[in-house]
Image (cartoon, rainbow, N blue to C red):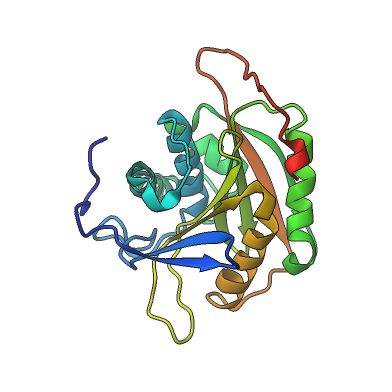
Length: 253
């Protein structure tokens, strides 16, 4: 992979935390976020595009997320996705292709260009309820259906709430789920932080949801959404081959 702007020995840097002894969290420096990257970027509303481009990059580069604390290629994919997502979003807005700056999944897939041509939406659902009530259970419901007959090795889920989209990547090979949030994060009493990546096992998905609601929605954004959307997408094989699974993962959820 060619290195994106600024990448080197000291960029991007991050601070590592662990939540509940189950969730590994990487908080990146402020300059590595959708509103400040690449250099010269000032603000961004491209999070849905960026999340889909990260999903495409993970699939296209066959990245296996065993341990996000030791995977340089993921950072490169993220940087490329942010840069392309911001460029594409600016073009969409100049062309007047959408009514609102915050794209939904369908709009992002439609106008996201050839980079997203191999992503397909599996299903989506809008929940009109406090996100704290049943986020884990609602995700779990869809995962159980998916893993009865998966269509791809990776399942990607977009969580859209209060104008912000984040990405969950479920990988059957590792039995791990990885959360990616490209926004900047500012919490009271802490220095500004950039994007965040968090990872845990399938078994501890509930802890990951709890961490996100407590440390991102509450501590950073000071919000509690009363409506949110879950949208699931997957990558289709360019050669038309159907995915074959060797094991059932549905009992993990």
